[in-house]
Image 1 (cartoon, one colour):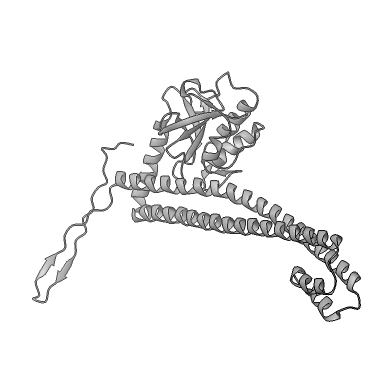
Image 2 (tube, helix red, strand yellow; image 1 turned 90 degrees about the vertical axis):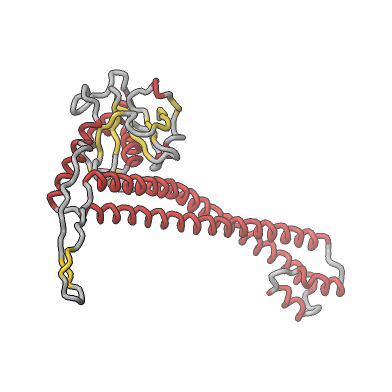
Length: 338
């Protein structure tokens, strides 16, 4: 973009009639500068992407929490059945021993949640047998185990609720930032919007190395899964950027790299920060086609290296899926999946 080019200032004039009847000219109003709007829109897109990648990471955590909660609840149900069976065994044993002796007390044992409350009464009639004591000990152990499982389940329910709340906040942040960006763009006149879009296209082109072809070919070193991942990414250039999307024709940054490497036979999480832990770290001097390259701190953007000093990445709603020089953004590291 030619940063020396500035938006023409439109002078808005108006008049106001004071109580004295004097006509006073209103001060001139300057409309937004195109470069200033570009900077503000880019910042809002960047903040929306940060929220989007946090949201993606939370979705992975939510999936894990829900899976864990299902396991805990199934275990809790099994343990509840064990407690009920152990309680029934205690009650049946006591009823068999004291049949006909104190029906009122025996009835209380049958309906009691905890038969131990009534063992003292029964012991007054006749001593509790060793078998009954062992049965009650088993019941007590099973009940304690159920209490442990219940507490673990309750904690997971609370963890899940907290993560869901965080995810909702991140989603609201994405929506808010996008709305703010759209409001800025809507403030521009149609002519200025056209100029802004043209400037954005110029900037996208300028990000590609001058020596690189319009559609860079992967370096010869790319083979197997890496070659498939690179070819998939290149095929998506020009597709739209949508927060949270993972194809087939719209992507966010980690959605693109996830689907590219899926084409290469490797499963990756839909999160840039999680993807950084999903491969072998490589230095910036040892990058090969197919490597994932990460940006910003904390990590909130990822692209796929295609060779010749270039990446393909889902950039933002203005630029969509595009080529860019590998070090055109604040570099955080790289990994080699597979």
